[in-house]
Image (cartoon, rainbow, N blue to C red; front, side, top):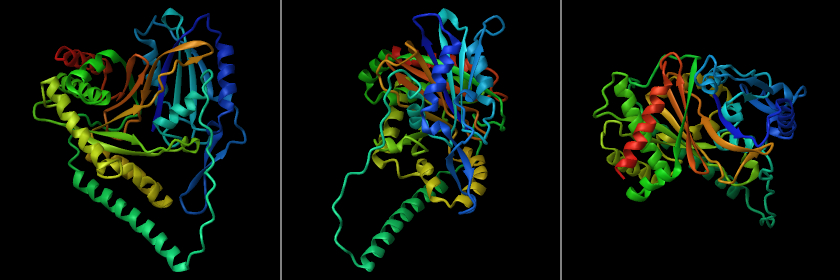
Length: 416
């Protein structure tokens, strides 16, 4: 359940690794979320809570490596693939930073790894932003003062409480019944036996090109990205010897349900949509039309309905049942969806670290058990950055998937 990002920077001067790691340690020490570790609770059974680690030293979570292209043609991707697969120590705060120097043109990279228990994608940006220059995080917003309500009868109070419980129970039952209806045999061509090995790939698409496609055919930039990925998965399946015609791949599209308050920055606050990607369609424009229609239906239904809203159930399950059932539920993921495609929101403002300009940011989503591929997308400035994470034993060459993304984007642009 590791998530994270590989972020590259273009410095104005020679990089001093010791000074840079000291800056990162100082800033990390000021972020309360990074000081906390999970602690088991006796009651209720199976519960846990976040608590400050009394032995916390930020520098212990930060490392420096020097990469070289002498032995690896793509040293950053090769190192990051090994790095993201290394388990985090669950007795300590669940994060790690690695500063990688030795990249071409004097660039350096920052590799941030978090356990998904700590936060989701939107929360991860809030954590990472605190390490950058001059980024002011939202402060915890106090609730506005409200007039003292008039006294109410015990009967009215009980009725309100029962109404809330009943409404939530109905919503939960609706999601659960949708999950049952959406389940299907786990026979996906992108499923794989569980493996701890990982391979990462980076893809950068020019944002103006995607906007040209959107202007020609409508939809959102996210719709265009999903259409590009549908075409890439089609090409990739064919190259792996699978039939693509007449097939769909079901993607879980996480949706943030966070409020705007700073108090919302921690934890996981997610719902999701299920979207059948039209990998069986050869026409790139028709693929976009199919994706647009599917996402329009999802948005009309809202993020709290349908099988894609399964993340909402997490907060409604008793702690002990949650702990006992999570592993089994994870193994059942291929019955509901074939892969996860998530988008990480990043503001368009220019970002920097120690005055080095942020150049690229590639996010990575955890791989569900028995899934071969996970895809994360981040739009920053003039580019869309796509992070590919694959099961290292099942997919020996992530480069073919990366090339398929570039080819699919080119085909859609040519048709626009």
